[in-house]
Length: 132
Ligand SMILES: [Cu+2]
Image (cartoon, rainbow, N blue to C red; front, side):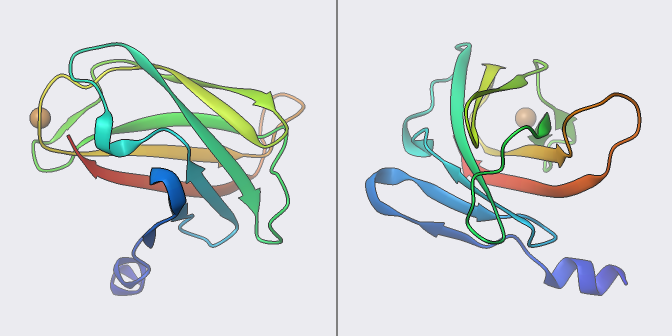
């Protein structure tokens, strides 16, 4: 099982204008990072913009997105607790992002069904990998 999971590596491809498309681990969601990953600021609070679509390419609206991540090689998480807010259908703004050192980082979006409270189904997890 573990080897299967490892083979389902996140596919990252470059799109036009520095946009990066990352497929979710389960293949149910695709995230387009609209914020240029090649010009991220160091030690500065900033926001990301991410567009989420479902497997049919339709905007994924109303999802609850939990943001995590860190530096896996340093075994530490993010120095802040970013939050995601939907600004238009399928487009989410991640606020409160700050990276405090150069190196290899990952930002993880755990995407769950929105609406209602309490338990709701996991939809997919997107891991965005980049160098700072
Ligand atoms: Cu580190």
